[in-house]
Length: 388
Image (tube, rainbow, N blue to C red):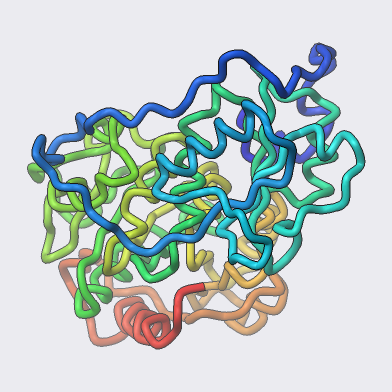
């Protein structure tokens, strides 16, 4: 079971299964495993790479007692380039609480709730007890992480949640239904972002045909998803520089190898997030929940039809994205107006467009109208805004 609260399985208390009846583990384990930060083995991360000061980060607020679990979280915060806050008035990137704080009926932490620092629940155990899920959901937790087994996920989440939003703009693009054209629009969006600085286009649809084929870049030389397993939070620049470039866009694809899973994608987004420029992610529906904590914008692409609206509504209920993150991108000509589609889904309308001519290759064949024009207008609007 994934430890991410956003997954559909975790939203139901019964998803933990009746067999999980073991008593909660003590929060005083011995000894807990601290995160390891060896020299990166990621291709392109030089052996003599100097320590970079990086971008400013926010601290991590711990709401719980002293002890080994607090020290373990402190070690993870340090490894992520952050620290545990000492003063209550300091701004936190996220709040971490031990599971016992929820079991004891403690009030919500200062970091929980809409508009406040995201909440992460940790516990010293091999798995998450079934009774903890509804408590974590009620508290608004983003994740429940058993330590030390979820050490890598905690490190990735702290690295992402504590960074200031002065880095890359991360835009997820996903389909509201099958065949919506999300991959094509993601490629056109990446093309439109070229004038605004460095841009990376990520193929995060493991069951799709592949963005490399869509943009006629099959066989391009460079790093692919299979080579990101040892990626660290400081390796974003090495990753981006090692990707193949197609018309000035850095492209991360799987090629003939397996595509990313729910562990690979957050790792890559956390590494690319602190950089400059834009990251556009072509998202499979199954990977939307694990990408949501990293995104500044989620674009839901769908045709203007009743069938597509019903499918999109079901996906939105499954994902439960935070308010204000998602906007609709509507392909006109399906019987409904773009405004009707957005209203039916209770989403803001980002942009609408008509299909491009047959044979036009996304990213390579840029048109004055259609989806290319819509992508340019949308990027221009986004660049006028401060990232959330």
